[in-house]
Image (cartoon, rainbow, N blue to C red; front, side):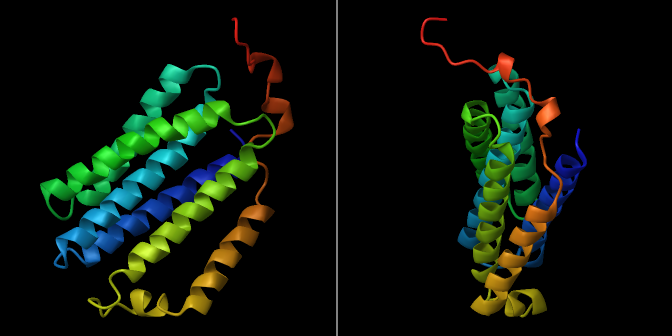
Length: 188
C-alpha cells in the first residue's frame, strides 16, 4: 500500500468522524436533520470506500462489492448510533447503497485515473459534510457551525483541501497497476 493511499484512508476516517461528531453535538435537534446527516455520511462513506475496494480488488467484483457494502453499512450505522434506531437504519441503508455503487465505480474506472477519481469523491464528501453541518446553523450555538456559515471560509477550506490532496503522493503507483488483468470483452 502506498503512502498516499494510507494518508487518504486516514483523511477519510477523520472526515467520517466529523459526520459522527455533527450528530453527537446536535442529537437533540430535529430528527429529519439527523437522519439526513446519517444518510449523507453513510452514502458518501459507502461510495468512497466501495470505490477504494473496487480499485484495490479490481477483477474480483463480488469481493469488492461485499467489502464496500460492509464498510459503508458499518460507517452509516456508527454515524447514526448516537440518535435513534431509525437514524441508524437510515445510515446503514445509505451505506449499503453507496457501497454497491462505489464498487461498481471502482471496477469500471479506467486504469491510470484512480487518483483523480478518489480525489473527486473525497471533495464531494467534504462538500456534503460542510452543507450538512450548515443545516444546523440556525439551531446550534457551536463555534464550528458558526465558523462554517461564511461561504468564503467554506470555499477556502475546500480549496485548501483540494491543493493538499494534489500534493499527496499518488494513491496507486504505476508499478503496482497490472493492466493485463483489466480486460473488457463482450464475448468472454
